[in-house]
Image 1: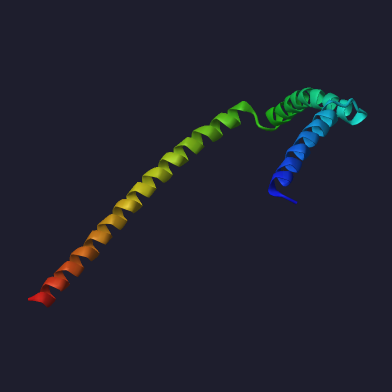
Image 2: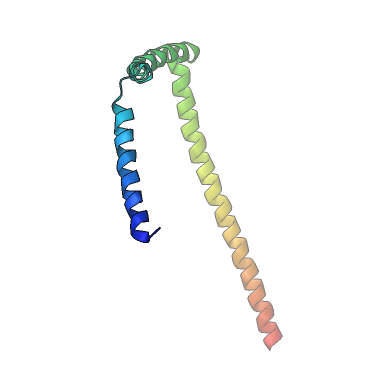
Length: 111
């Protein structure tokens, strides 16, 4: 078969595939109807589930406890950041001391 006929067949196959695809997408089937109704129902199901979960969590964790937790969490984060800065500073000092020691040994070796 020549190359031009192969290309022609490819074009025909693409056209037929497009026609079949549009036919299947527009076909009214029970599966498609069930899918669209389920898609519409899921938003209301999510909203009711969120309300129920909010009520359960609200009863389990009083607002005062949540406020205390947020305050302590904020303070803990600030404390950890301060600690990390201190550790980084100490490590930088040790690194500088090691570098200074290496330089002095290199200078002594050269002289």
